[in-house]
Length: 345
Image (cartoon, rainbow, N blue to C red; front, side, top):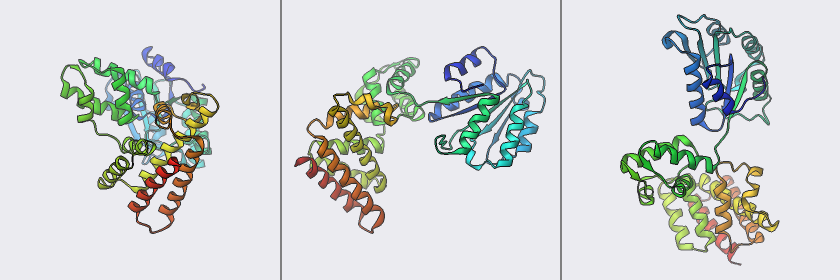
């Protein structure tokens, strides 16, 4: 069976008609876990202590997986086996042969779930990940759990708050995403905090600013905004705070580089009479579309040539930071000044 969508997966679950094999992979951790949990619920309906076996990939031998899959359910119609946190890069040629033999001979009363939980899967470059995906598609259902768009995330957050007796305005949901994360697990955690504080009624912007921990990425993007506004005092204040909080200088520079890449891309789009959001799919901004909008807004007084100069400054700083013993704080301070000068000329 070829790859199926999340919608098709939830139809399997709703109709209580699971396939014998599922390969769950993708970038959205929270939804991957939710999908696995829902599949387990239909794959093991009775006596989970006897009919559910979760096997960590790191310690699971193929012989043990074969035995688990081929064990009959006890006082139940189905048995569920989960191979958790699979890493295709660690699967040998012999193990691939064993997996194929297991996958193609799964008994009708067994549901095998293979989860890519934490390991990064690169299906474009890795032959082993491609091979595992093809095996899953051949003998079962492969489901990619995609990162949500910012619009989808905002809707999920407003619904989450509503179901718990609170109201979150859509624009405040977008704001929460911008300052916090695009990961649902993090967003729901912060929203739970806001709901506990608010109890009922509307979650205010003031409550968000007071209670939500702003991500390092959001703070560095604030730094880029100050630079684009030629606000040296504000830029150095944010940089000093980041350094005081012991944020890694290499990560600060990398995130700042990403911010100015956003500016450059937004300027390229504008130079071709296109909206910045139109290039979101070309550079995988799914869930982060707001970055292009913000980059276009904050760089109104910056042209494409100045954006190129900024990227050269950041490239040179990256080389300096990684190949010399220069003081990292001094390198970053110098970068901030050079970026302001680059867009001031």
